[in-house]
Image (tube, rainbow, N blue to C red; front, side, top):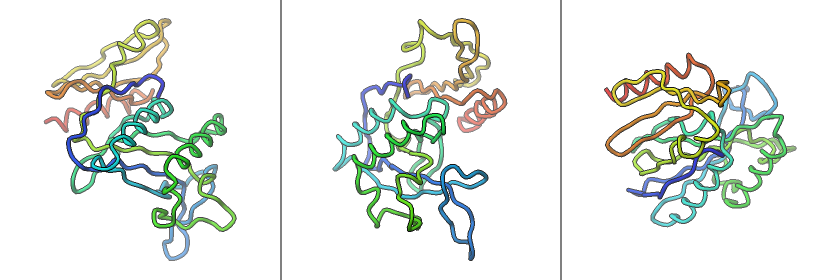
Length: 225
C-alpha cells in the first residue's frame, strides 16, 4: 500500500500474525472444495495454505512482513475487518490478483513464499493441489492478518498526500467519520472511514462505492455503540 506507513509497532500479547495464500474453489462431488484456476469466475474463496507468526519467537519477522506488505497491498482493500477467532478479532491487509498486474502479483507471491517457505509445506496446505499445478500459480489473494489487540497505527492520509489529495468530511458521528479522498481536480480516489478512540486514530480505505462506504461507516458506529 503506497499510501500507508507503519508507525512504531507495539505487540501487546502473543496472539499470532496470520499469513495466508488464498485461492478460488468450486464445490465438487461429496461437497469437496476443488481448487480452480484464479482466472475462473463465479467461484468462492478458500485458504490454500496458512502459517502463524508469534511475537514471542517471531517479533522481527512480524515487523518486517508488516512493513514490507504495506508497500504492495491494495489500497481499497486494506486494512479491513475480515474475521475473528475465539481470542480476538483480526484486521487484514490484502493483495488481490488482477490480470493487468499479473507479473507483479506473481513476483509478490514468489517473494512471500521465498520468505516463508513453510507456506508450501504439506502440514500447512489446507486444500488438495491438482497434480498438474503448483501452489504459486493458484494463488488469487495474499492475506496478512493481525490481531486488533496490537497497537498498529498508520500515518494519517493528511501526512502523506496533502500535496496531492483533498480530504472531504461527508459524515461524522460518535468519533467516526466518512471521508472522500479526491485529487486536486476533485475526481474521487476512494472513500475512507476514520475512527477516533482512546487508543488513537485509525483510517480505513473502503473503496469507491458510496453505498458500500456509507454502510461500512454505519457498521463502525454500531460496533462502537
